[in-house]
Image 1 (cartoon, rainbow, N blue to C red):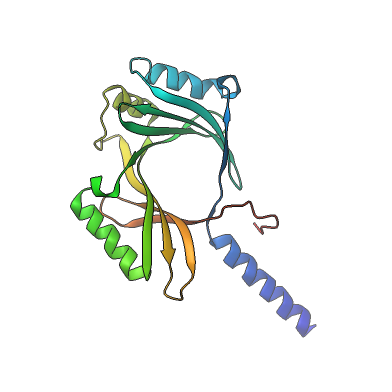
Image 2: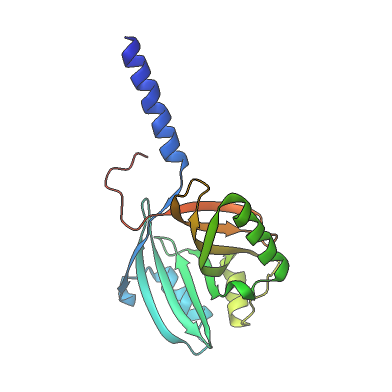
Length: 198
């Protein structure tokens, strides 16, 4: 009886630890626009009708618990990604940038966080992430504004290769606010885990 109770307790603790650890797994493949939800397609057509795009393509993105649609394109020299949930509602807009393009104070805050939490790091990808009201974000796009707007939430999303103080290498997606405070982190996995406990 005692062994059974200890086993149950250990199982519950393990389940809690695994569920608390956020994991990012994404696999994407190109799709034809006919496969995209009408709402997402209509948003893109309306909001981007007046701009000349380069290298535009739709993607289907599969995650661990959900799937989404993504429209990637170039506008001038800038590379954008617009993500929609499975029903076609706007999730976010991302603009690829270099770390050195961020404001100096933001760079400093992020670097201080990384230096205190990890023994080494390599920044692999940096993006401005815009979320908020879909019509507001559409207006931002049409005006080609990239500065924070009152109706848009702006964050910095980064993919970083890290070395922990124990020497373990790990790749994470980190989300920071405009003051360099960590909002969210997810461990990036390359292959879909076969036996995840949710």
